[in-house]
Image (cartoon, rainbow, N blue to C red):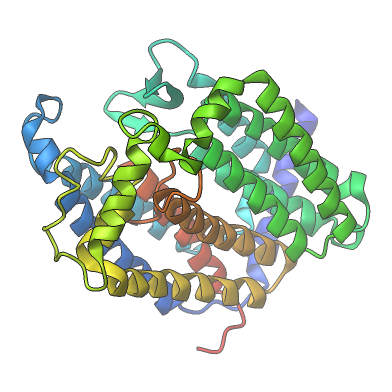
Length: 399
């Protein structure tokens, strides 16, 4: 145990020395602006899509602003977290604490994430929603452990790929450990089940490996292993896969398994070119399940139409592009990999959420960043944006 603590202390000292060697300037303005615009859109859409169901249901105390209040609480917590993770703290002496601190915290992040993922199965703590065991409750706080675990996995991959930068051609030194750790979390996600989040983890690993200069042969091996794992999973849970593949033929069970997919498609189609107008979606009146969370994009498309969707995609694209610039211009390998991981996470989650809403993927839960209802999810996204801002303060970007 003493050796472990000495290793952690050494990591903190290295993080402090690394932070002290970089010039500091203001955080990236465009990331702040684009994030806040998306958050405001999210607040409007959460209230708009949830008002009727919250007002009608005793589960929400007949309070039409129930989900909005929860989102505002998450926003407050997220802004505090973003401020904390975005700052460069100056300690006595020559030490600065910046994004390198995550390098030192990797063992703790992974351990805490594993414990949280296991807690979903503890009676009285874990909570099942629609047959999926994905949530834990601490008093008034509901948390989906896969969200903070996702950040822990990103930090771990960034650490391995930065520490072993010149060994990217060695499968057992780089690809194997990152695949093993990611695979452990993926197995737990499959058991829950949470297929869309599982795919997010896999895509983050693959894209970070590609960005780090991994060999195409290694990416091919990962693809083959993924196909084998998918086949084994099908053998273990054939009925679950039959339910997940309903998106391919939702009209075969329009009032059962295909209901959610069809209602989502009806909402998107009803939006047309310019949309029905804000507040005028019909699908939010108890037709479309999870209208305020996983399927909020369907309500947005219904009310703002094709033009509104293009504007929303443009905002996401600009945010992702700006994050990508920071990843490229980060002053060291760890900063590049960490920024690339967060950027990939944002891009993949937007892509998969929209694909689910449009019926291109199985209807499993995955929030749309900054917009879907969920206070803890919003807080975690803002904290991760804070890490990006921290990297931007020392990145060599032409303002």
